[in-house]
Image 1 (spheres, one colour):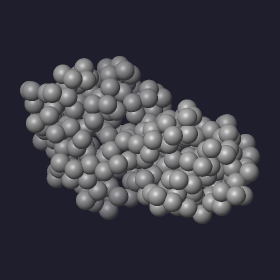
Image 2: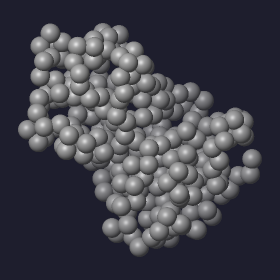
Image 3: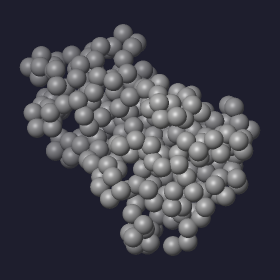
Length: 281
């Protein structure tokens, strides 16, 4: 395993796509050195965007987390969330009825509007669910994992409705060596139990990379050769960037532990262009 200095690497690119959890922050807050890294990018005129599978909050609330941590460079215009793709799908494909969702009230931001009403699974009466027209999986919080997951499964047994998974992550970093179960894993479980096929948005699907590429090229005169994708997960960030045709950098501050890095690359066949200890170095 050959480690590269991230700051030296960043100078080779005009635009950098960052994953959020495990790269910039974890559940405890910002990782060390992150505010200084963004000042470095600003000083060197390197554009950046955060590509996240986090659909738990709106881009405004996601950006506020960084701003409160002393990173004013990150505004809601810098956030590209899988929830934005789920919102576009719903606006074009779901015309009437109520939308049921797994997640917090804040996560429902992505599915509100256009005359549709929303109801959390926690508040849904399954016996009066005839008007539920879609189910959206947004976050792993905001509901009882026993009662409400069982209710969700039985809703899917009763109603032939589309299911949208707005976050494909199956885990997210909790500490240096610990992870927690994410909503993508719940989607995988429910899909198997209900014997249905769900619609998924987020990395590694190329749609979020296409969305981000179109978004950033409106303001930046760049090609794919000018963009670097930085992530902590081989199975989402790195393979997604590789498939989209942009360079990739694996960082060892999140899902991929340094002692397992070489083995995971060999066993999966997912090969990043670069490996960095941290984006702060």
